[in-house]
Amino acid sequence: MDTKNKVIVGLVILIISAVFMNVINGKVTEVVKNRECTDDDGNDYFTKGDTQSRGNVETKLRVDSCHTSTEIIEYYCDSENLVKSEIKDCTNLGAAKCELGKCI
Image 1: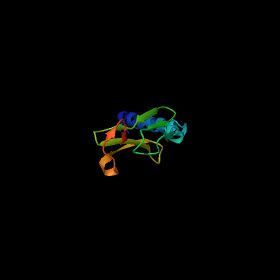
Image 2: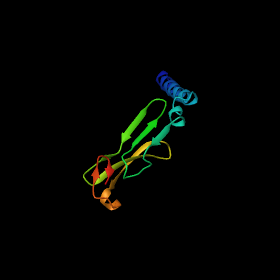
Image 3: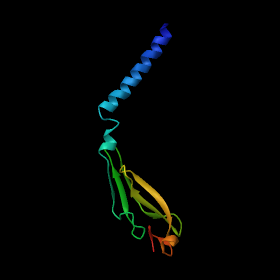
Image 4: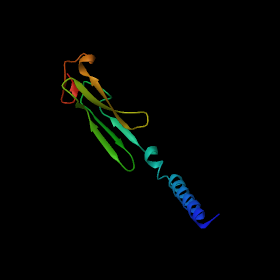
């Protein structure tokens, strides 16, 4: 094996080792492991709510809002405690419109 190939193999081993050590030390898995998510309106389209996801590194806060005059952007916690959103048409839910982050 020539010197160039030895250097490339050495760099690959170094990179793999660095990634492996970060995973072992919890730097990659720690955020997911300790994540919390709260949705204070419980995915209720008729109540404006705050949804917050907190991890070791980041905090995300999302507030339900109107996408259009009849569509709501509803934020909720998924099964992995991440904040997700969906757009729903309030008129399909029996409401007349979306106003101030809730169907009315």
